Image 1: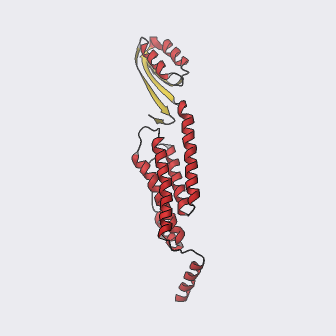
Image 2 (image 1 turned 90 degrees about the vertical axis):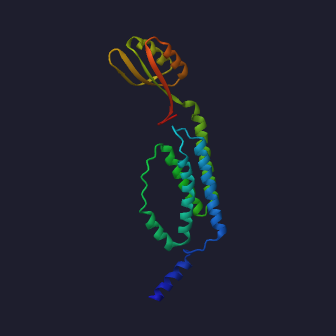
Image 3 (image 1 turned 60 degrees about the vertical axis):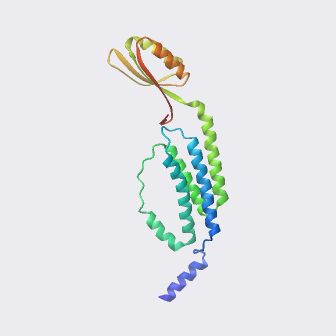
Length: 221
């Protein structure tokens, strides 16, 4: 039995499956993961367009990058420990709902950066994070002038023609319309001169109230 154990240990050592991690290597892995994570944190924070920015989620991106790098570094250094860690991680369940699909993308990017840094591919981890963040920022700047506006108006039936004409001038698209015979509640999307259209609609006789909401995709702000 002891002979079998000795053979297994010797085989694992010869295959390089058990390595001693130096302090310099550990610091290099965690430093690379931290740089990637802090870059993701900054980009996410300054280019977030949702309703309410969550500082906790920004910190989660940074912590996820560091934690994944730490796990991968440990697994790659010891195959025996990696088997136990895989079993332990398999029982973890995450049930927190993600409100914005873009948050999932940032979380996956943090995981990818942590995986690459933990595997020792430091240049690829940093370069990949920088390039993807650069593309994201460029796409944000390109789409800045394409914000749509949601108009919700409540008015009397007699003002419907004037309101419809103003919405048509703003290239509005009807989303919903409800009425009780005397009053009408309308919801539409405006793409052109939304603030001017709102002020003109409020001047129409018979209009009770009108609200303008700016939104991008599923997130309102």
